[in-house]
Amino acid sequence: MWLEIQGWVRDLNEVHVDHLGSVWGHWRRALRSPELNLRQLRRFEARIEAHVDALVLAGNEAQEELQAALVGEHDEDARAAADALGCGALADGAERWLEALLAAESPSRKDTLLHALQLRPRPALLVALERRGPKVPPVLQLARRLARAAAGKPTLEAEGLALRDLRALAGAEGEWAWRATASEKGERLERAEVEATLDAGEPARSELALAAAFARGESWALDVARSRAKDRLVAARWLAALGSAADFELLMRVAGDTRLGPERFLPLASLGDPRALPVLLEQLSLPRPADSSAAAWAFRLLSGLDVHSLERVPVPEPAGALPDAFDQLFLDEVFLPDVAKARAWLERDGAKLEPGPRWRQGVALDAASGTALDALDVAGLAERAWRRRVSGGAAAAQVPGSSFPFTP
Image 1 (cartoon, rainbow, N blue to C red):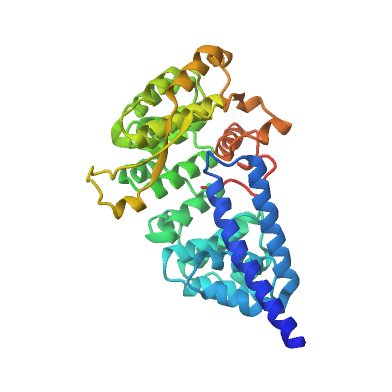
Image 2 (spheres, rainbow, N blue to C red):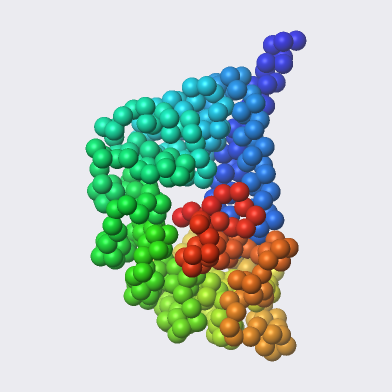
């Protein structure tokens, strides 16, 4: 009987680890998704907390499952174990996490383990990191900086590398140095470095570099985004989220540049200017399904009207090669727009979206509050949170009602 109970408990702990890793993955993707709303995000967060609580309560009974997940091949499972260990699931959990971080070879595993530091204070992890002393590898220097920032403590890295040197590192260390830069203002961030990072054309680092500049309140950040918007979609997205109606014409040129791909229409949705609706209506008839479907998404995010039809078609490969019958089974698919439906709405109700407010799904986003926020997409709410942070209205870019800050 006891062996049966032990087997049942072990299976249950494995389920908690597996589900927690999966939900964390969904949560991270939800922060960028125009499809998920705030109500759905809260459900993810409730499940995260429930699984973490279960593993913390299991304690030593879950140590085999947590250790296997921490060093196993699946990053999502390692993310789950790191979160539970950071919350005190095992007495030596902090040391286990630290050893796993030191042993991590792939950038994705380092990224996974470092994420456990970013979303909430981890006192046990900070104690373990500071116990190692100042002369540690760059990845632990970064981990210590992040843990101290999460705990609201100043950085003490006199014998470590400067943040500028850490940002120059390849892989996960360099990207996380940009994240650390966002929360530290002790070292100067030069405009030229951010511009050079954008010009290098690496989307992930470009995103983090602009996020750091805006998070620190650099006066030149918006000018940098504006100067690079026509060539860099990541800069156009930041400009749309934090710029103004004066940037409409520039973002219209971005939407017309086919080199930037189907996502070029989404900055118009982020800007929330109703002048874009007639233009987006025209783009619904574009011959490439990926382009017309993306324009339909932008139309929906502005107006609140779903103008996708029920007709689903495969997206041809960028090179235009015709796939054979087998390859067609694995092509991405999109729903074509219902142009007549969009036109009828625009003629009937389009004038209700008056110039001035920043519109999101037919709601004046920046003035919305209470239950009006529940049905809005998380990506739009995250952009609103950044506007409040940049304007000085909030200490962190946090989606209202969310347990965790929005981070790039």
